[in-house]
Amino acid sequence: MSTRRSYDRVAARYASELSGELAGKPLDRALLDAVAELADGPVLDVGCGPGHVGTYLADRVSVVGVDLSPQMCTHAAIPTCAGDMTALPFRSHSVSALVCLYAVIHLDADQRALAYREFARVLRPGGHALVAFHVRDAETQAGQAKTLAEWWGNDVDLTFRFLDPDAETRALAGAGLTVTARLDRSPHPQAEHPSERCYLLARMP
Image 1: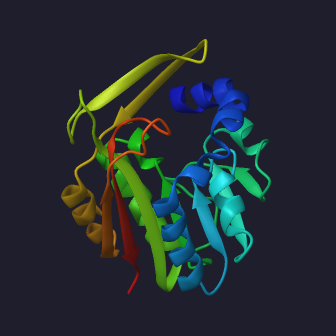
Image 2: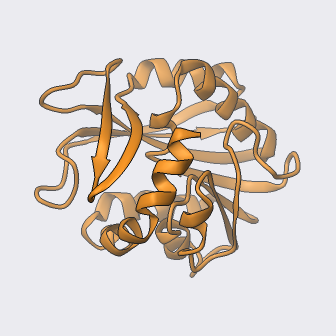
């Protein structure tokens, strides 16, 4: 509940500040291009925020977004609904691919396991999932977390977890998803939080 309320409070500013961020992230765009090429049906953007990732994909594939924050959904230019990634409001085997960029970082290990099982449930056989997360920054290592109490002048209560790629690979495997590709990258200077990042591309059997 605190995560939902926090993102509701900052939704308008978040959309204003971050909706154009993909313009400065060529590797992110390349990975999204790969997802679009692999998809043979609708794509689900999980934790879509103001919909900027889904909007990028929408030129090539049919996209729908889901986000915990109803206020975030109001800023999206793609079809969206409010929902929890640990209980996705979509039918089983209904999407050919999904993307989840920097959203699982708000979940603890048990919640991430639930989310990954939900990813596997909604994916069609042979479908792909792209999951991105922070790994470390100057103050925080993988397995640790930061809390944020104020953001853009708003009171918030957010926990940002920094994740171990090997542990997340095992967690995805536990849900039935096999990691087929991994990209680790450094932050883009002055364009994003200065953290090391990881992207895992996983496939359903």
